[in-house]
Image 1: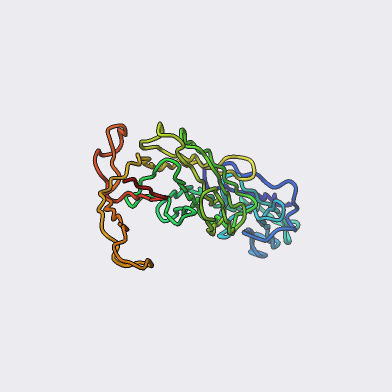
Image 2: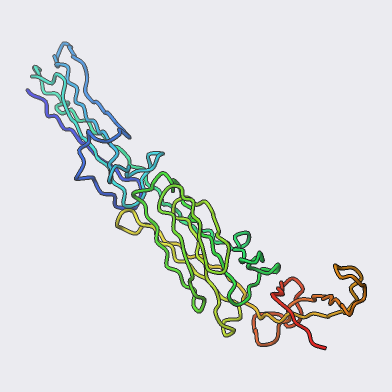
Length: 326
């Protein structure tokens, strides 16, 4: 009697996501990620009532990395994001398993082997960091384009630096892509930069400001906004909706926002007149008077509903020129 041989090969996806097989890449072109080999059966058995030939059956699964334009479609720790892909080869074979000779009926008539390989899944858990403090532009005249209390005047450069955070970000360049929807009304977008490589150095130039240089990694960048009218004074929300894609399907989404305050500019000074005692003139006190200014701060009125009324000493003032009359 010839035994019945059953071989089962099962590829198990660990998670609730659909992960495609790679139909465009043969298993031999990738890196071996996982392998499982199962064997069932027994050696030759000889008893008074039974002679049974040796019979072993084997089932094996080999899982290989798949690629897209030369980039792996799995993480460095051999896990997979939703939308990733892999190649696999399933192999079965038998060893022995010829005829059985037995004078009496025997319950053992089948040999079964199965192999199961799990595919570990994970979510990217996308977050986005947004910041403005420490990332200020500098005006051409040397003044920082932001007040010490972190408020802005109209026409200041509001420089928002963003950085996406998810596992294996730089290692998955080429297959995992991020896009941003920026919601910033009524602020005007003056310039932006997006790093589409594992590492970038960019210098941004905005009219009226000194060049600003910064290093970024993948998906990071900066955007410059400003308020262009006194109608824009008040607190404004700048919101980013970040969407993460695995070549085509969206696999994650994260929303982050930052609030920035645009305030009035109304500098408060007191002036003091004094005689110039020493200069390059031949005679002292030759009708030459100096003016000393004491700056108290910039005053905010009830025109700005989001700002505290009063004089704010941490807000800057700049004197471009002056004149006097007698």
